[in-house]
Amino acid sequence: QDLLDFVIEDERLSVVKVYASWCKTCKVFDVRYRKLASQFGDKYDSKTGTEITQKGRVRFAEMQFDNPNNEEMCKVLNATKLPYIFLYKGSKGKMKEFQCSPTKFKMLTDAVNEYADPVVGDSEMNRELEKLPVLNRDDLEESPQDGNATIAAQSMSSNGEDTIDGLKQQLVTIENEKIEMFEIMKAQIEYDKTYIKKLETGVETQRSMLEAKDGEISNITTIMEQQHSVLKSKEEEMQTLTINFNHQREENHQAIDELSDYKSQVTQLTNRISELVETITSLEQESSINENAAQEKERQLIQQIEEREEEKELYEKERNSIRKLTMLGVKRVGRGIRSLVPRVRRK
Image (spheres, rainbow, N blue to C red):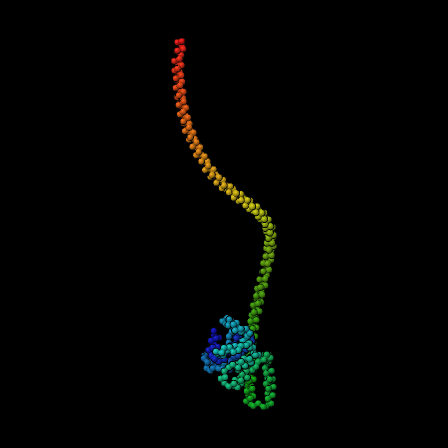
């Protein structure tokens, strides 16, 4: 959001440099980048450092790649090869982007010359840009003596044709080149010193870590030997457990077979029980029918018994009547005999 605000708040050309604190090339590039910004960028109040006293043709800014707040933005912008340059121009948006090393610094000056607004004359702008030295890869390893040889060669080639003003201007340019080279070499040396200190600290740290690791390895070796003996005992236990497991598995197979037989027996019993239930049901039905018939038979028998009782009572009555009649007949016969005897005796 800060980058977007910076780009759209002004219609002038805006140059944004993406760098990282660990990038050695970025530190060398930064020297020339700041010089370019001081020549064509905004002029700030020396006291406040934030108030613009004079606007330049170009606005300069930078964004740190390894800052957590900028990490996502750098990935979105695909700024992975450092240092990386973006050129924006207000509402027109992004004009150009490229990776720019110190040896390719002329790409940046050419882009500034192409896209910057012509506030001053083009010839003056070109002259100012030409004052910035073109740094080649061989120049980074060039010594001050080589620079003096170049000066002598240039002086000899002039053959006295240059004026005193031209020589002064040339000397100023060469002096600026030397100063810039000195600043670049100084930045490289400072970075190398810092980097070497970091390496030394890292080496010491690694050495102490290695010593600690040696102690840890010794401890781990002892522990490994103990673990090895424990592992052997565990292996013996595993063998015993394996044998027991095999026996148990055989017993389980036998139990499974027995369970299968039991299941088949249970199935047969279930079927038999179903048949018995059906038989009992049919017997209950028959019993119900027979019970009804028995009740009917019992009723008939009771009726017959009652009839027999009635007949018996009648028979007893008739028998009693016959007995009475018999008794009466016997009495009459006795009377007749008693009356007959005297008559016989008389005769």
